[in-house]
Image (cartoon, rainbow, N blue to C red):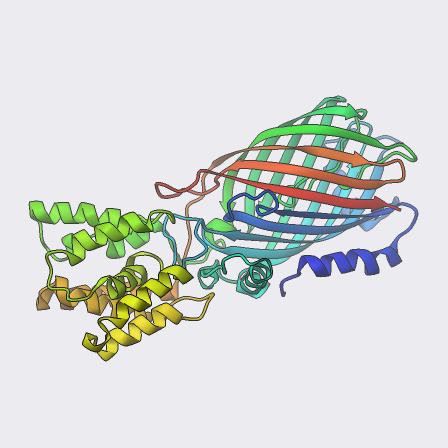
Length: 482
């Protein structure tokens, strides 16, 4: 299943679905992005969803499958309305620093997924229940790498470098139920339940509203929890402002933890056991060794915003007082390849490094030159090859280790590269996640929907120190009842 761009979703909405419409049909489009509000580009970075809904008459197969389940949460009567729906959706996730080609340990993994859904909404005077079955895919086949790279090229933003490390391919199946009940026209409660091999979680929230609205539930607001479609009485519009605080309890999230049952993954802890205890591995249990271990841990704690600080530690720890003859140009590239996630070198820094390397070029070996040239001008959007990473370690280790230590060090490196190349980095899920949504919703008397929605959430994974502990984004909805 290939990536479905927002442009194609819009074309489907405009040219395909109207041919299917009856007097009781509607379409809705949701788009959200952290860039819409000028917020930081990380974590849940983009989502889009397109829906087509129409009346589900008695005997409709959707009602036969989901109707009984929905009726548990809504008291139905002769005035109850039923809408069957079809949807297409996508979600993209990135770590804090998209300039790094390597894994940012302790950060959120890259992930992308798409799905198609089939739903039934049961709507009473003050309650709306939507149950949706979705089938889709998570992983590189979705096309998240190409999509975000092209979009960032178009808007002139930095090209994301780390999509090659994303959660691997897996087919997905999920069942979602969203319940919204209004006890007063200005106050309601919301419940959301997800089960499947992508998301297993449950949410509870309260909805406070103010505006020209009765007790009917309004449409949902987010791609992550789309809720109900456009709910409207004939020739009667409404509008309101809302605030929706709540909490989500997570059991599993494949966009963080990888597919259920897969053993082709490793966590931050697994990486620590492989390669962080260098002094212990080299059997150097001295006071100085303990101090070096402390510095090393500071060196590898990359939170995406402390490259300069860690480069200073790199120079103090691994360059100063060694017989390293290289100037800052090559040493920075070694640091970047080994300890800084192979971050894309910005143009200004690139010019400085080129000038610095030019002054020592004749003294460099062919291996040093190959590492320098590739590191400065490597293709955008992918990992550095294992051979370049290995050469970087080899150049550095020859100046800081004796021959015996160097053999052990490089053997450990080979084990670590083999370990990480065959598996995908994942993180641990955070069990409790708080959120607050706010916005404006308008449904006109002829059934035109417009809304703008602000989303704030605490992070949903166990992060390393120094990473942002919350995220914000803006979403928009457009829709029409026909």
